[in-house]
Length: 136
Image: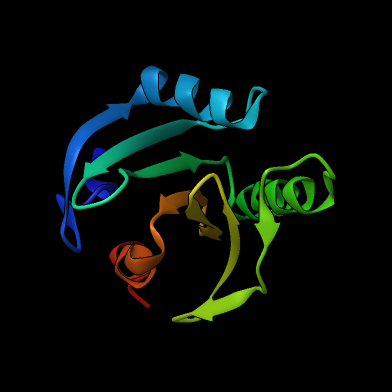
C-alpha cells in the first residue's frame, strides 16, 4: 500500500506515512468507527500551505469499496452537525469524486477498484492531488 503514496503532490512533499495497523487506526479515528478494511495507508504532505492528508483503505471487494465511499458521502451530507459543506459531485478522468469543503480544506472522496480515498487538500492543490491518484 505504501506504493500508492507519491513522493510529491504538486509543491508538497511526503513527510510522514503510516501503513498497516498504524494506518488503520488513523483511518478508523477519522471515521469515528471501525471501518472494515483489509489494509490502509495514510500520508501527510508538507508544502507552502496547510498540510495535505491522504487516507486510503482497501476493502475486500470493489463493491464494498463503493459502498463504503457512498456511506461516507451520505453521512457527511445528511448530518446537520457536520462541519462539511457539500459541493456538487464531479467527474475526474472517468471517476466520480464527491467534494466537501470544511475545516479549512477541500475533502475529496472517491473509490477505484477495491480502494477508498479521502484526500484533504488546500483548494489550490485539488487538481494536483486528484491527478496523483486518478490516472485515467
